[in-house]
Image (cartoon, rainbow, N blue to C red; front, side, top):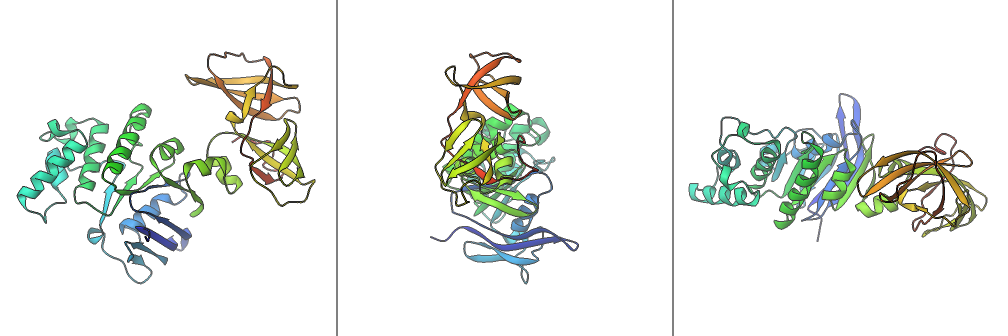
Amino acid sequence: MPPLLKIDKLTCRYDSTDIIAGLSLSLNEGDIGCLLGPSGCGKSTILRAIAGFHPVSKGEISLRDKVISSENQSLAPEKRPVGMVFQDYALFPHMTIAQNIAYGLNKVSRKARKIKVAEMLELVNLSDLAERYPHELSGGQQQRVSLARAMAPEPSLILLDEPFSNLDVELRKRLSLNIRDILKSLNMTAILVTHDQQEAFAMCDHIGVIKDGVIQQWDTPYNLYHEPVNRFVASFVGQGCFIKGTQLTHEAFETELGVIEGNRAYQWPNGSHVDILVRPDDIVFNSESSISANIISKTFAGTSTLYRLKLSSGSIVEGLFPSHQDLYIGNQINISLAADHLIAFQWSESSSKKSI
């Protein structure tokens, strides 16, 4: 089965500057994808190009095997089977919640419109607020109305542009999971734009990490974390530190934390100097280990505590230990490495020993 959305060698420009350069990706029906990256990387431009709000300089965008944008043609935004959920909700203040949801249903009968609005209100759990106005709702409720309005015409694709950025942390977490459940219950295809990797991991099936308008890796959250294809993805996704290593074999490296053997083979010559990514969950407290570290800082996070640890060489690593195992800044502890995934990059002076 062909993908529902296909972007092929997309280039978008502002004036004469390429914001997106030769970008390609595909998304299957029913999947939730994500464009993840730092501010200014071009992710919102991609979303605008899919929606028809930004012209395509090169390449093409296809939806259900139909080209909707290319260098030579562009389907008008209102003719694309695409729904949009905006960062600022973009609800009509003079309309009730029910009227807002019904806005895109002008081509169906009054009876069908009424039924669809009722279905959407029930789906987003706002049935009792149908006659309220947007200013009478909380931010989270307004965002659910925005989603219901986008879904009501049954588009092929839903676009979510930083939809939770105006909400507090706990509400963001709850609402992102709630919206994922709603989209999955309807088998709807969606693309989320965000710079928050926890949000991306919680909501999405596939994530594209973007740097300077180029997708560095389009993959599952698990693979992005454990199998990053380059140093930027390794640094951007998750926490961790790089330590120096020397290649012993294609699958084993000597480091100050001992010999690390991983799940992949590297084809560099034996003796090569490398940087090895060590995640906080790779470090374990081990009283019988001969490797010692000094605790230089700690961050309590409820069920766990993140410790920054200084090794005898001066290198810094991070360890995530259960919070009931309360250790103190200045303590000397013994640690060992328990890494199932080996992530190594050829050594460079500028990146060695840097924390993520």
